[in-house]
Image (cartoon, rainbow, N blue to C red):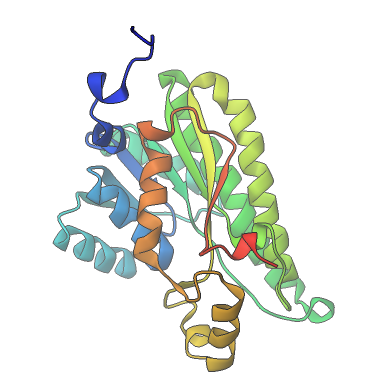
Length: 267
């Protein structure tokens, strides 16, 4: 007796759901660390990647490294905290590379200091980089996606979107804001066929965290605090990024996908 259920593999091979061929992805802060890893992942899945940053030399180095992996990659140097520069930069990409199908809002910074002594200039820089950039780039790209009726936006959150740590109260506040901005964007853009989700990395080994990796006391604490018992490797973000960027997540929006070894699940 027929069940009335159409098997997925009978109409569309499952792996095609994750195929990003013929799509263009913009990754802000894409020349190093997590941004570079996410750009690599989307390129491995077939996307043409545009990496953004302010340092043209570093962008060129990252472009060469991605090309060596077989990724089709372009660079776009503009300041994501400058709304006018963002509008102009996104327009250039649309005109010269092609329609932006996927946006990864990854640009971010950290500054550690006790709350009572946190410098106001650091607060302003952190807020501009971690929050303003998501609004500015998200708006600029969405304005192009809306008429096309489709698009994927991934905002890079953090376990600090949920959890605090000593001496990073403003950073945690900024990542909490990104989480809620993600949900708000998903609500406003969903009717235009655009899915907006967050990717929440836990503690990953990058050049920005190397000092903590080398701190035996911190690494011992982290291993005990994290169910997986270790630091993450940035390549372990690839699957989540490809999922959120692909047709596999066509009915997923407003969700924060934590890739954290279980740290947000454990007291």
